[in-house]
Length: 120
Image (cartoon, rainbow, N blue to C red; front, side):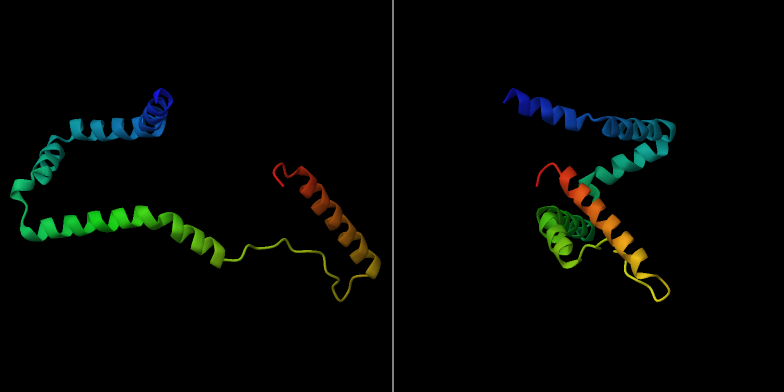
């Protein structure tokens, strides 16, 4: 339980979040009119029905997007084929020995890369 709380606080107060919060605080202090407009925008008692409707629809869309973002990412990753490395193929003006040398070099590099993969 303690570790989960500590991990949550570390993520909440990461350097990026602290920087973002400090920039927002600085902007609100330097521009007092902006602060007043933010307070008025957050006053939900003054919102019209259209504003309520738009904000609720946006919240539902955001929740659905967060819920299904992993599934969409996996589906797109599966649909888009990965590019394979170009191998050395003989051209019209190349000699067969050059092709064999390049092919052998590529094979050695592929074998070396396979040996370096830690989790396979």
